Image (cartoon, rainbow, N blue to C red; front, side, top):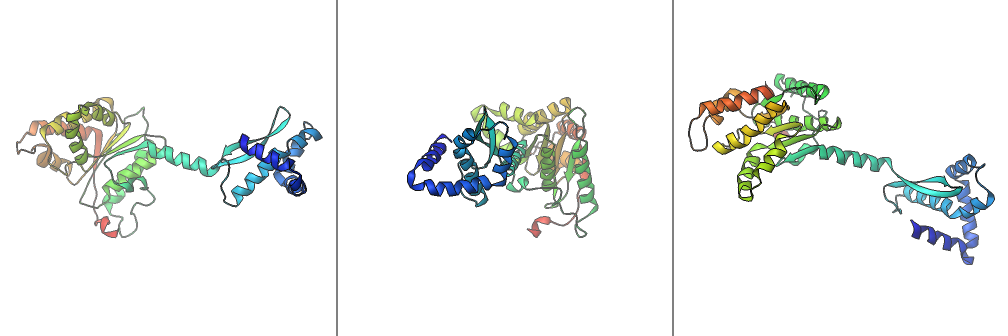
Length: 312
């Protein structure tokens, strides 16, 4: 800012450009905002202070013109404002509405922490959820209504179960979870979305780095947690009991809402997935223990309809 001011001062002092600058200053003084500022502070400004402030008035006018023309400015994303500082005219720069909105959107994105999730989750909204006449099946409508109600009534001081969305491939389970997370972000609620099969692989690899505990802690403490595609891959005993079990136990004790999506119903998840580990060993008691926590943390909704992925 100082270099710009010195440049303007030199321009205004040069003899060859004095006449041109006088013409420019006529435009500056004719600017409605400059006139309003000088009129507002006429009792505090002298002719000498206005003369000394010519470079600041020009800076203000010039930067406004650059913004209007879409050209580079001295402070991109900020607009100039005139102010009176100890009787002297000065220019300050404040964030534009566009910059404020970009910062707000960046802040909202930070509230949705995704782990191994597709890029589209950033764009998912309730407004774009398929609820037209062709796709408004009973299951989709019920799931949408429950998700919207959760967002409206969520309070960190009152336990509210999440949703267990079950249904066939492409029915919109993951999209609805993402739309819910983004809607919660609008309310300043932080959410963690995890593609559980990928997370399970990541957890196995983290054993070598001795940071499995840190990763589990980061997930289990999220105000709202969404475990996507649970049951998609065979689960080892360690992942079931020491990863998923630990996460769910903590969230049940702390009463933290948890969402799930799965191609399995709750009953199918228990008998066909959790009860049988990746080595074929049947462990119904341990499966029942996990399901007890899932049923406490969420409410099951069966989603039906055609595969939306075919729509692109």
